[in-house]
Image (cartoon, rainbow, N blue to C red; front, side, top):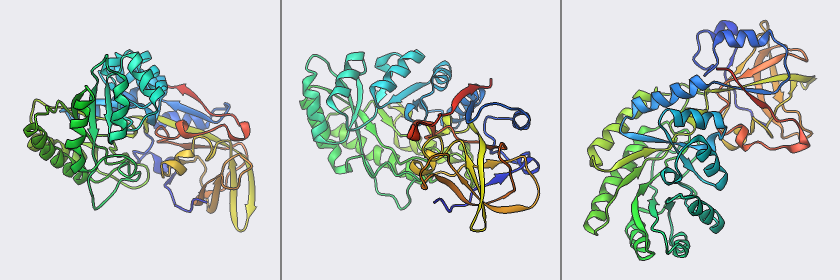
Length: 392
């Protein structure tokens, strides 16, 4: 069970909060007065654009390649492409969605460092030619593409005193000392060493980790220069944080030291890209659930919702997030539990909420549920997954 407390809001507190994401206060008020089938995910086109523009303004030197894995809904991809953005893809399915949005395959970045050969074949066959590797065995797979000269980036990792909520350096990234030998292997395989890549992790609140990785990139670029390798691009990854429960720095404040590190360490002719996922996709989506069951158990009010850990709330498990809870009920708060609709006792999202008593049929609203939620859910128990509804 998830014993972590989260932030709960009713109307009086919600008006003073910025945690409603892309859903306006008036829209939420009207939602509570309507009757419709739940669960449902409302998505805001306008919020997607606002987030894209906010990050672009905060980090003007970096081109945005949206991480499709965070939420692959076509509306998000279409809006990003219309803003001038590009995409970071990891599979054939993501390549298809990005191309559908209008991007040219050769402009995509396939950033998964370890890929099955069939994924390589599919991407190369579609026209993708920018890839990321972090080990010699992956480079060996490139030998099958003798008729093409692919652009290969090397992903490295650094040591940090702090980590992101999801540490993406745990699974991928070579050591700094391995970079130059890998560059030689890429050249020997008949392909182009194109640049460097790192990814500190997802929901990272420590700008200094980016600064350290960028400083390391500057040192590596000098070493590569001396060895005769041209670095054309530096990918600084994603991980830019959003506010769920705990306050975090605004994106301008967060990115300021990152931008300064880029200017101090990376020469102007090297292209910079970033891979935001969560920062763009989290706030445009809001989940609406209904209470389908209720029980008093061991001194706690248990509420059973029509969505749970095996569906949209999978982000609690895989993304280690807690989402704010909005209710229109007021009155004495009682110790409460929110559980999902499946037959599994693991399917409990919140244990320890203090909320007023609710009734079967009442709705609860969960903002900030756009990133790593629906995409990691399943159809366990063959229950209905929520559909998306576009609100603007």
